[in-house]
Amino acid sequence: MENIQQIKNVIDTMWVLSMGLLVFFMNAGFAMLETGFCRAKNAVNMLSKTIVVFFVSTLAFWIVGFAFMFSEGNQFFGFVSISNLFLCGREEIYSSLRNIHLPLEAIFFFQVMFVGTTATIVSGAVAERAKFLSYLIFSVLMATIIYPVSGHWILGKGFLYALGVRDFAGSLMVHTVGGMAALAGVIILGPRVGKYNRDLSSNAILGHSIPMISLGGFILWLGWFGFNLGCTLGFSPQLCSHIAICTNASAIMGGLGALLVSYVVSKKPDLSMIVNGVLGGLVASTASCPYVHLVSAHIIGFIAGCLVVLSILYMEKVLRIDDPVGAISVHAVGGIWGMLALGLFSAPTQYNYPNISYPTPGLFFSGSCDQLFCQLIGVLCVSLWSFTASFWIWAILKYTIGIRVSQKAEVDGLDIGEHGMEAYPGFIGSGESII
Image (cartoon, rainbow, N blue to C red; front, side, top):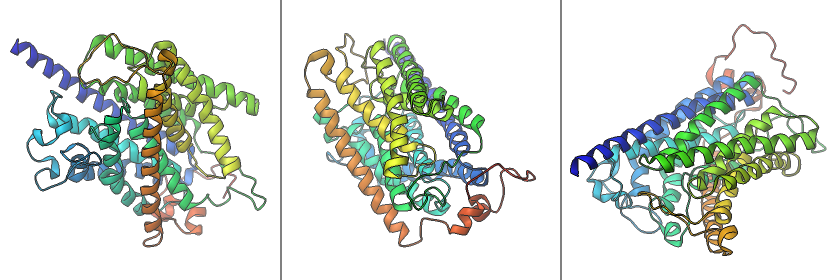
């Protein structure tokens, strides 16, 4: 019997590490997607952010972030001491992980991939005008404080977990946190030069590579299976199969919803909206994929795709929030919808898988608003925390070292102004119509 358990532990560890590698590959997806949405003169800057942010977020999470998130503490954050910095100390001091039969380093490896994703969400929203150094400093603080504290509230068995809030793979903990941090940054930064006219009408600033956007979307779609499947923290054929098909269902229906809405609004199927619709469906799936029926996963994804398109248009045209890649709509709006959808669609379960803490049945299956109410409280608390903390950090950076490049550097391109190089040397003319 002991040998069987040892074999299972080996398989589960291999599973989590493999899924972590898929999540790591999502960095390539973000790099392609965000670079494609930006103009050619800012391509080096976007690629540099995507690469370097993973360096600094990994270091920050290793030094102190992991301790804040998982160590013994109170309902709001883990206590940090010499004994648990740098992933040191006995595994027992990470109280919320005691019943997970995996090496501590395997758990850290998987979790650090999520931290990098959260910080990368912000880079797309503040693209084409944020200083490289300021963004990196913000990313360090995201990995040190913002993400670990809100993560402790749920994954670290904090007060939201005790209340009954459930978020399987991060609609709230990763995507809403990243999306609200991005919203704070965009508000502090302001729009790009040339985005809005004096009469407040907006100009379309087109990205330079639709193929890059499409490739990035497919890579992220692939990586999302690692995102959701890895959160089982072990391999279970039936559970993992269900999560895989529900994840895919939400993705395809998110793309279909975005296709239909963009066609109704503009009379043309907008590929950039379709890709963001797929991502919005994936974001929404992360909270609920093991808890809902396959039909429900289709519905959740479809609504997410519709919401993403409507949100992008509303933010640009009405709120005048300049988000070059649609990150706020995909991650914040999609994440909030995913959390609330769990409260509506979570189904009674016949199973009791290890490492999975199930919510109560949702409104559509029980007639009770209890789980929906819990999810709403979780959304409000985490959104308020992420937005407020991020707003103050961006504001402090603005009035100290500055967060925005000069107007000349912005017009010339951040590749030259910030990095002294071009992504496409030798090519004359890029077809860019906006300065």
